[in-house]
Image (cartoon, rainbow, N blue to C red; front, top):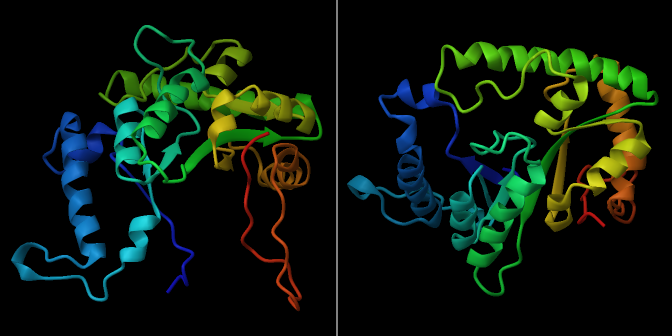
Length: 263
């Protein structure tokens, strides 16, 4: 149906309530994921499943297009050992005792574990997602960022008293804006400022693919459209992105594009 365009991303999930609703504790999520992932791979490969059934038609090509999302070094090693791609989050909780650790400091060890476990000859696939808001005016971008990030901090503070989720309080909702930006791993400002901020993110230097989002900030719709425009026209090319060439005779540029490794 997708003519070879489908890529499949999977992860254990990090919200305890998602598991508790099915009678599974959050601590079991790794084992649950591994067990069900093995069934999925067997189904795609056309191997016999419980009850003697098989998936028809089989989809062995999908085994080459799996990405695993993870917050942990163990998850990075698992993705590498399975020859899968590695998906890194745009933000994630800080390790205990390291509240001011940067996202790169957390994710570089995950990348190293992935590369170490990847079989020889298998090209690494590392997707890094990042939050960014690019604007023509820095003051306006910061105003939107402050409103959105304080909402996120307040929501997480409220969760801290009612939930065991790992996304509980990350930063004081009344903290200075710069501290909120650091806590939520946001790249915000003019194109030049965002480019400099992304270039300082050392995990991106090892990424084969980069995905940009505006989550946590949630600016007005027109600001999102302008951010996408500036990202495509200024920010992405500065990081090595090149538009795919249109096929001969095509009247419109292709939809599919690629973002190359950060320079």
